Image (cartoon, rainbow, N blue to C red; front, top):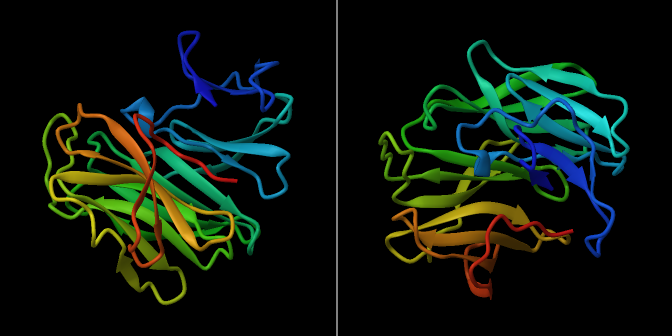
Length: 232
């Protein structure tokens, strides 16, 4: 988990029952202007954490040793969120610029040291990404209203599934209530469901966690007054 107990936000690990919290990073997690948009990922074998710090992605072992730079982002951009799949050893990451609306999605192949971009600086705010179980597709969010303001507000954020081979995109927020945002999307462990946060677009209302099918049907409320879900 991320905590800013000190001056800068750092990554901690703890037991499942909440005991034995330990700070494992000294190079802080950073990048996104909004700290609630920062995210990290477990390595496929569970031995390391992948996380952003400014314009770089790092890995570190769970005992705090072995800090290693994995990737440096494009000039002038910083990383905000990332995910890592064992399928072809690939990393997905989102970079941001001086504006929260300046986003680029990057797919990076660790073995070949090559990356390509999905899109760069489209209108409206984006979020994610997150790999599917088989690594063939990914979830991300985008405000389809294309709205931009100084406070970074979103008006109509939808969840999308992108096929990483064909680049076909499916909107799975077809049943979202008007005036709300779907955010923080993740696949279920078996790949059959999506867990996500839904909230009013006013930016101050309660956030709730829902689950739905991959086609956007059967939206079920799981937890009230909660956000940033993960499912393992």
